[in-house]
Image (cartoon, rainbow over all chains, first blue to last red; front, side, top):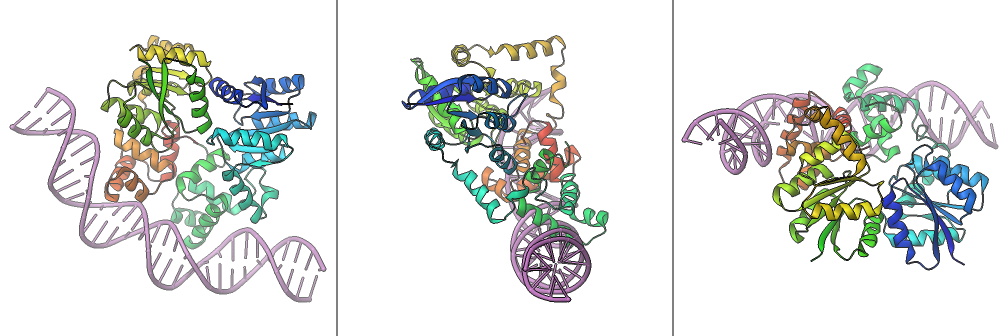
Length: 215
Length: 215
DNA sequence: CGTAAACTCAGGAATTTCCCGATTGCCTGT
DNA sequence: ACAGGCAATCGGGAAATTCCTGAGTTTACG
């Protein structure tokens, strides 16, 4: 019996492309598609697929919340997340929501097929890039508080991060916080280590995404 | 003779999906693909396709700048932008850069095929959603207003800005662009002078607001 | 042809980052 | 009460980067 799959992605060409590619796999049958979270949930309720290929960025109800809803109601439906994002917070939340796999849109199609088969066989699938991040987190024993990426940083670190993301120099921050430049440097490198980021530019983007600063 | 097409998108599955779909169209031949702007330009230089299907959000050199480079060098290559974004500023710039068509990833595959044929027949293709925006702008004669700080920077400066906003170091940028570190420094300080900005953090925010890089 | 603008590059001083190590205080489990 | 972990603080010194000043080359255009 073939694996009944539902595609959820807000881009039509993406869905059509996947459908075309999957057509060649005899053991995989695309039973339906949805362009947003809410209709995805309805669709799953209707046709009870074996597996859902889920994008994260969805209008209305995002992929993480959709996954949560689906799994909590239909615990035997597998969700395989196919996302453009490799950020920790997404990964963590997705698995917390009950997903069985996570791979990047950047991957090869063969990997997707492999992931589908792995997940439908009741196993977890992690693409190498994601595995890397997950393992790093595991080694840091910090996975318990990655819910928002917010809590991996200490209060002081978030404070420094915000100032960095506002364009303040290390010296300005030191003056502002009335601590030594050296301490600010330590905080900055600590932040970068934790977030696995190596530049102010990416740090700024992170801060924006996390709502720590604004555009 | 079939239309020779190059696919440019940073997501592998997207490219593979498109390739699979386009395989069924006998008059369209996918001659190559690229995952970022710079290699896209190299690829186009090599194989001289009839048409390039171009994503906007690309690492290193974004779709707008890549289009500009391609068109200015190979004026007979058509560029069809296939983007997730429908913001004015992207549309305006893309056409300013010389693109022949713009459609959303959200479109049906049939529309993409139609657009490819239209564009390769030397005509402009606008998907309905985009046409809507363009017409509205036209009626409002506001197109001049859409350059917003966009024109203060030169093409080279925008190129450097994007790389800075992606977290690249001066040295990395120099290597990438095959110019000296000193030149990159000059560009950076020129950019900062023009924008009256004094930090990478603010520069990054500016680049995000201007659609030169993405979060 | 002359001018302005874009792009390129360098020297050297000033500043910042980076990589080590270290201290203090607080909380936690036993 | 004490060991251990962690957050927050700070420093030295080498390495790297930025900043400031100046300038050559190419390109576009009137």
